Image (cartoon, one colour):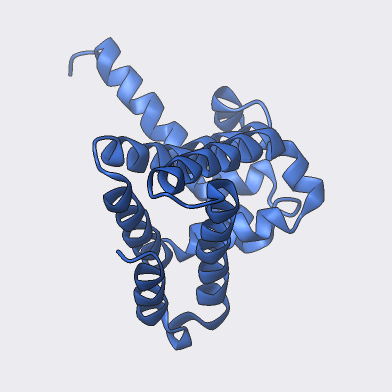
Length: 191
């Protein structure tokens, strides 16, 4: 067997890093940030505790990595809509948000739980605030292009509609009228 190439080593390192992030995500969602130890995370990732410290210096650094991983999804949506008109962008955001609620309930639960834990939220507050403000700025530009009198207020209202829908779906799951809510939002914005 020949030794691994540098590319193979990088790929293996990234794969192990992702394993740790996903194990920590699951642990934080199930046990809470404070109760999930580095030992538990390493065990769930299928590696030794010592090896986990080779990738992340602390639980806080793992949390930062999870947030970066989750926000990368938003950057993908941003990239997908950059050449669309305002109405197309808004429709795409609604469609993708509702699809995300259904397919990524654990992520929505994780982010909601994180927001409700001030002692943990302060660890990622800057990143979350930056992402929220960035999203609001995008929505504001969309509503400005669509001719709204107060595009910033509409951006906040739109964000609140999506956030509230995500929380409602978490609380009621299959009993929540997700499709009806999506149609209501699409109708409200004439999409």
